[in-house]
Image 1 (cartoon, rainbow, N blue to C red):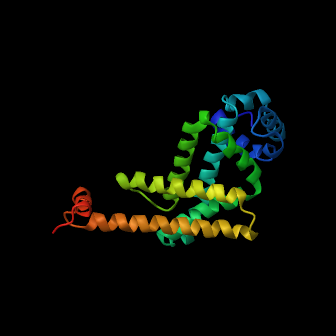
Image 2 (cartoon, helix red, strand yellow):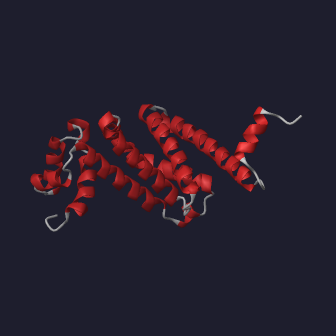
Image 3 (spheres, helix red, strand yellow):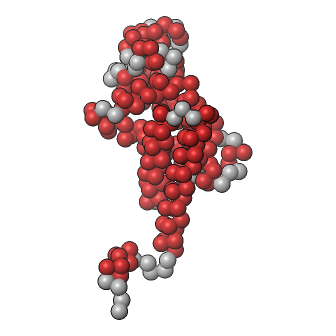
Length: 214
């Protein structure tokens, strides 16, 4: 551990922190206990997270995103249809988080604070990007952003549902996720239909709705 850089140490601390967060929150006390667990000087651990809880949470989410990408990098996953890949990637993310629900609940409360709005948006976008990259998306045009905006909405709403779901095996959460994904797929199909319409003009289309031809 002594030979690790702060960038290398940060994800290890963030992962080990999860065992202490339910008792001490995303706090300096939790970080000090974590440092002791893995044999790191507490002062060095503190340097890894200069802004405290927000930095700890950001490190955990980044680590979770990378773990999801690694778990989805299999031939079986690649053989799935795009809708199934998106659904599976999100499920992988939540299934890995299952033992740490209380830590994630506390993280969500911290990120919901007004002062953390920008960080929360950035982290949500990063997770949405990881979901689409896991699914094999390589778009660089406007679709790159629209897909991630939709995935952000799906993931955020599913997270809120998951945090309060007490159904057996999280069956209610998975049903909720399926409904949200179905909605996204309908939007994607509608976009493709409009894009494929030769000479289609959204403004002309809306004008005809308001002033139908005689």
